[in-house]
Amino acid sequence: MELHETQTEQNIALLTGVDLGEPDTEESLEELRELARTAGAEIAGVLCQKRPAPDPATCVGSGFLQEMAEFCRANDVNLIIFDRELSPVQMRNIEEATDVRTIDRTMLILDIFAGRARSNEGKLQVELAQLKYMLPRLTGKGIAMSRLGGGIGTRGPGETKLETDRRHIHRRIDTLKERLEEVARQRGRQRDRRKRDGIVTVAIVGYTNAGKSTLLNALTDAGVLSEDMLFATLDPTARALELPSGSSVMLVDTVGFIRRLPHHLIEAFKSTLEEAVQADIILNVCDCASPVFRDHLSITRNILRELGAGAKPIITVLNKTDAADPDNLCGVEGVRISAKNGEGFDRLLAAIENALPVQKVRVSLLFPFSDIGQSSVIRDNGTVLREEYTDSGLLIDCLIDKVTADRMKAYCINDP
Image 1 (tube, rainbow, N blue to C red):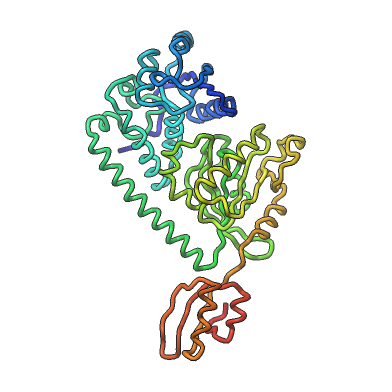
Image 2 (cartoon, rainbow, N blue to C red; image 1 turned 60 degrees about the vertical axis):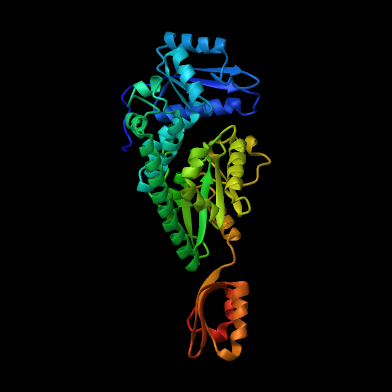
């Protein structure tokens, strides 16, 4: 199944939301506007209805649905984008009532990801997320099924083939899972190798378009694509960073987070997100020039907690200070930088050094049989990489902190 890289029509979109009394409704709609712009849509308008709960059949009320249909006819709208995930029934009923192709927030994000994925792993992850999302929605009816290959929301597996062979979808999903599991194992082996070599990993996380790739490029000359749009980069990039003290860390850029991140994506990008979970230090980068940057910081922290990384050392990085109102930053703790012009990098590097875990060294120790009990010190304070009994005693290859290494110097057979 091939991923289509091009759009075949100009999408004129109506953005639609349902206000259920959530505090972030307005911000979420503004974010939807940016997502639609990133996908290449022309925004004709935004309509939002206040409701106590979504209508099970159409998400919005019948009167509001009629208003949507009239707006679409008057403004030549050919795409409706909802700011929440729609059920297959809701999507079909909206399309029939408006005669306009309809997608939801999840489908829009998946479409953007399909256009952004470059690595083999990224493409596999996107396709898996798309297939899982599309499977219950392939009813064989509706406008979305009749307009193949046309516009936003149609990049990805060909829908005709999917509709005629559901069993093929399930087989493809199983194949993708197996291939991604192998990728995850390879990534795990790389992390294990870094740990064995005593390499400290620093993950750059944060809201999409916060300047993470710009920061990575500025610190390491990584050459990663950096654009003023959401999800400019999907594939993680790792580069060595030398700190002022002379020690080095591995800096890893990760996929950006977003409000109401679809669970399909969290599951599909699990191996990529594990780079953040397994990192020694996390940089939570935000665009502090945004009026809702506090929300972005909070959303990122919540996602990190959901991923199991909430207990890691997290350094808050307030990026784009050159464009921010200083009054808006009052009371917010964090390292203030501008990745664009290099301001504050000295403070950021110092913060990383202060958060470094106890430095460990790799040593080989030979304990004679008379002192074999001393090996318990290594098991209690270090990581045993390999051990074997020789004619001279117990040989242990391990990672231990420098203080312990000095204590065990009498047994060391290599220079740490």
